[in-house]
Length: 428
Image 1 (cartoon, one colour):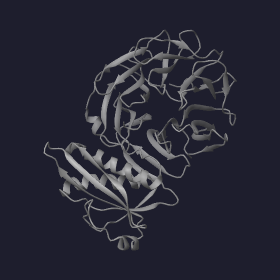
Image 2 (cartoon, helix red, strand yellow; image 1 turned 120 degrees about the horizontal axis):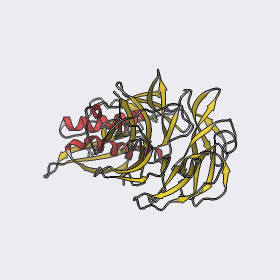
Image 3 (cartoon, helix red, strand yellow; image 1 turned 90 degrees about the vertical axis):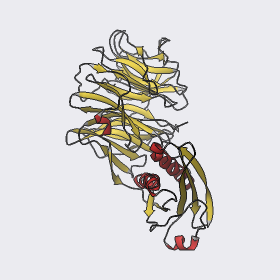
């Protein structure tokens, strides 16, 4: 929760637990608005086996790779090829295809579906390996995400994020809904619905819990929510405001912002609800929006201690803070990348609030968007894309942009205002 807000929230009563509501079927739709300069041409053959099952898996793979902006899909021309098929490499090479995926689906004795596939380098006439994924029949899209992750990593050298999840808050018809969905916005489910605001959701490092700020007590309190059981623990309910939770890399602590002693300052608490309160910052200004560095050694945060909101860094155990941003009079919402190389944040330029990224080695800053009301950036776990909220036509939507600004996506729901995105970690 930022203390330099550009919007306000109104509230009422709470419905707890893991819910699947009609809103959960309002999926995020994705529009690709930019692509990489040199896309890799890839063909995904129709997998052998039941055609209906094959279409789900191969359709998911093709969609994942296409929307990444890094691949150009080559029409396989109706070819049905299993993972052991003999490949006419010359023919595929002649069709300007750099890689070809083949595979099959079969039901196992316990009713699950086994997806087998192999990836081929058509230019070198060689196999790049393959894998087998066993899923329930209603989880075939996850098998497709896993296949896409494999292809992405083999062809780019970086780990894919198609099988990860995102969290976000939808406001519709006076209710707030904390949603969990696949990274492509599909398969949404409602973890929590409330007529009170839900803000600042953040994923635990293991992906099993969310910490967020709830106004159900008529004031902001911090809750840790176990997604598998629906169990909710209040971890910060001190006098005044309790806001802006951020997980430590080991999952044991949350950096939080409390106003119990006056101005909003940084503290840490234990994530299991056992207390462990420790103060980190001492300033005459407002310190807020903490985020741990990838290695857990320091915490980035926003403060107006110098007169205007800027980003600072302090040791994870507390102490003196160092200013990080110097370009511009308003820089907030620091989000260090998982690889430790970059820092995303929101900067105000000529009255527009835009997403920017800083290279931490050179301190060079690049503005990534041309919008005017960006907020709540969140890195993909491979550090290649940044998910954020923005406004179009007065309605909240989610957008994603690559760290070089070239690949852009927009995610929206026709019936709701979408805010507060958080990209989850890699699946274990």
